[in-house]
Image 1 (cartoon, helix red, strand yellow):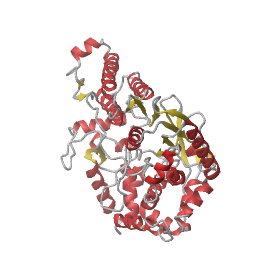
Image 2: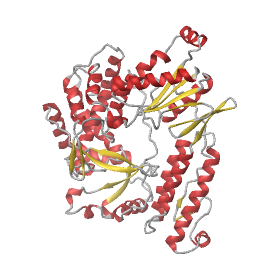
Image 3: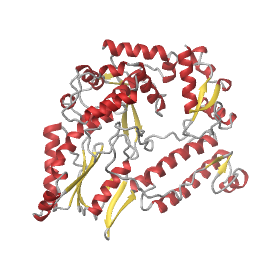
Image 4: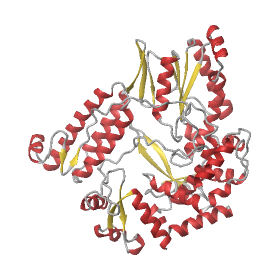
Length: 539
């Protein structure tokens, strides 16, 4: 079975809006399909985290071939029953915590297989002005769409809307009805229903899932977009107008609208009056309430003038003297500083090299996201000074000496800061212009283009404070191997550096034995996958 060709067929059929899918469930049962799903789960940065069963991806890989065959058998027999997700919490920038549901490894693979089945279909239905959690679409596309709309279409009033507790309040019956309009095969819908109703396990207590899609579930973002696509299609009666109708509305003073949505955060912009904008706010609220059983957040939904500025996805979009600018928000600047402080206020009994590499990952990811801001130059320069000061202060505490002594005795170089062969990233000069088209993107799955997914800065980046000695062995293995793949010779960086267990965990009486340095070898991601696959088929 060719997975790519099958997805292309699904997308081709889906171009006909009247087409109904009544015989697609079996695709998920094929070994090739599940193997692709497993590899996708493995490539995810959170793949090592266990669900409520305590099994890690490494546990699943000990008998990968047999486990995938058993999973295929369960799906064929319709005996697959997902486990509740393990509830955990990750800190947000404002000090609050965001709930996250962690499915078991087996459930993640099936969710990914389900996403691979549904996405080619629904991508043909989704609006061009929906950007969140979709292949080949980025946050910057949404921000640029809002910026350009404010400028070229002279939109002055902005309805900045946010749906109250969206992911926790998706109505399961309403979602079922929406899906049934496209997917008529009961087997597929039953599997979706099982995931929605799997429940939550927190501190040993089970909670039923009455509403919502579990945050952390692989298929949840897609289901969320399926749900809110109803809003996107409803809005088209004001946004997808002919030039004749658009001119007629403008002459009558009604104004025209554009719409930009990223997940549950969306903007509606108009060149009409404030009164018209207020009326639209009421219409949107009524539609969400009556058709989707959702509520606009009074706290986060507001009507603003574009000259006063609106915050959208971490950027502030504001029109001044005829020019629309997008700048890093004050909250975003405070957030990255707080993360750096957290990293450098912690314990000093950790590797300097790992501390710097962890800091680099965080500030580089943050800078890559905000590099398109008009004030990126100044913000990045200030951040460089801040990180340098905080890191040298941490080094001073680690070595019990002054910053001046650290610079004189420990550093290989002050600017850029280099110590023990590790160099602190400087983000000054990373500013850039966003030149990609935010609209008219080709429909995915219909051609041979690679479908890429945006990787956003981690909500809870690892900053080295909780580093264990077992983790330290990973760095030691990489340093021993001189940060080079031992199979193909490729130079390794944080993004592609992986450590392979030569002898599997099950060959040892304890994990500590498996984690001995002599049992570890440094590999790039591609070579690591090849070794795992060869091990699987050998068994």
